[in-house]
Length: 136
Image (cartoon, rainbow, N blue to C red; front, side, top):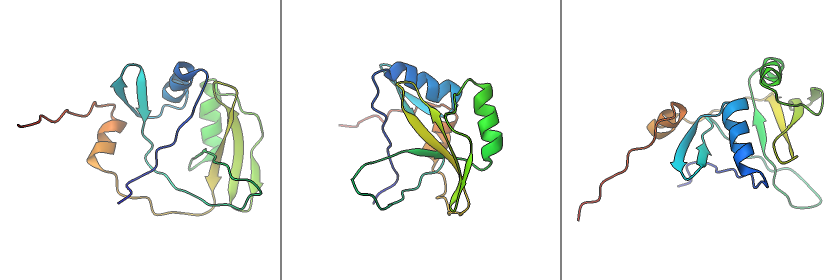
């Protein structure tokens, strides 16, 4: 059974991008060693939209776009567009290290997020998962 979604940024500046996600966006994470941080988000959703060509995209969403934009700007996040109104929500874009842009939006629709697991709750507190001992 599928339990979630793993999104990936491939970047020429991965350390800078990890610091951005950790420090500027303040996403909870698990440090799995070797400089690798796995960021945990409390919710996820997948959409399928019409397009002339196949591609994948990643967007962040929030409950209050004006408040979120203000908070992120105070942490040095550079926005590349003003908030615009679409039929499905309010949307803007900001830069991430490496030169890419990602969307931030506040949806007009509501979803039913899944209940958080103990593992996700621990990740939100930046707790390293305990290693299981193998009995032989």
